[in-house]
Image (cartoon, one colour):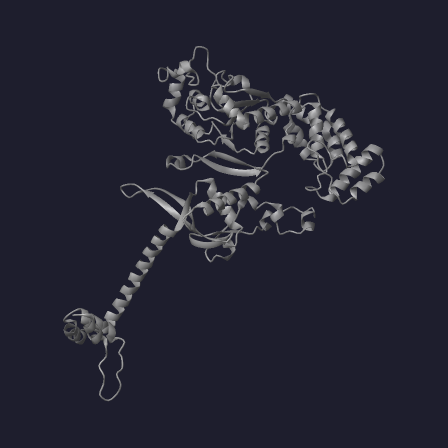
Length: 573
């Protein structure tokens, strides 16, 4: 049978009384009858037996088969087209680039025009007054605030699936999907999210440029912020995913707000800057010195040790990797992996190292120091009985030996800044704070009178950008009255208040352009003279001033009573 016979079968028979008409439902049956010998013989009795038209069933079956075949064809064709004519970059949700891309997409038209979006609420903005739907008179009315009325607009992100968008004259395809990893027995090992960026062409350069743009956008929006990371949960680490998780992003603390001797702060910043210089790593390598730097901040609680570490991170634009040795969720092996997964430029902060359960060794106890050549030859030879007992008690305990090896062992990471804080440095083991592990020690003490003066001036500096103008007017008025004994402010002060320009805030003093500056300096001196040297911590002084943050004169009047009350409480304790 050839194609001529097939087309002849499809052609309808002509009626002698009228022109030929075509029965469309018979066309598939005629085609099958032409291709399958004996079909017409079987179809007619089968139709009579079943009581239905077989041609309709054949037509429907062929239609469904055609649709399935066409869909499969286009699916395979699209896969081959993407393989041959598109480039792709895959990003895992555990990577920082994922956050860069997602935050960039939120501000793009794709997040406004797409028909498949995910709505999200940024909880960090819920209590941001700038996003409140309140009028100024409501905020300054003196009524108690009710955060239940805070309204924050949701952000929208592209949902799972493919999304096509145009950027800088080129089309990109963005897609989100889940990736599953199963064992040989079919059980689910892990599940995470990935995003894919595609572009048409044989080069991934446009995608790389887009990712760099997303990273620049992310950095620009966080120039004055500091990221803090903590060890990820043990279940996440056990699944081979990220060892560190970002916990918070907060505004960087200005170095001028840390109460410490100015020369000490300057020397510390110079030392860190010299260490971070690109040429320093080469110098260390040429001289055979491990490229590491350690600092110990020690002193009473509330003297600003952690605040200084936070401020240093803001000055140099570094991330803080915070490790709590007392949380009981890390072992020696975990700690070693954490240190090896650090970036080359970062701050590792070990807070309250003396409270981590690492008792000071007694005389006669031995401990391996893998940072020395002699100890390397003795690895595995012996450990102290105390350390053995700790290992037997629980596997999630960091020992002194494990901490030392993570800090500067043979395989320890280089390029990071290690900062330890301690309230009781005399409790620390000598091996932990020896030179090479701790290179610089900074002692924090209770506030001196110059430091109390500095805290007072900084607390009442008229920052118009953050304080209502009425509060500044009242502060200047009270300072003027306190100085002159008059009930009205001086003409000079009034003229300064009425100026529309906002005075610039100096790092460690009140604006020089403000007439209240000399009077505030006098009040600050009187307030500082109320206290003895190194009797109160900066945190205590600041805590008291916060209760009078809008009224420096009232703080001066109530200062003596507050001082006596604190000293009396200390004697009773």
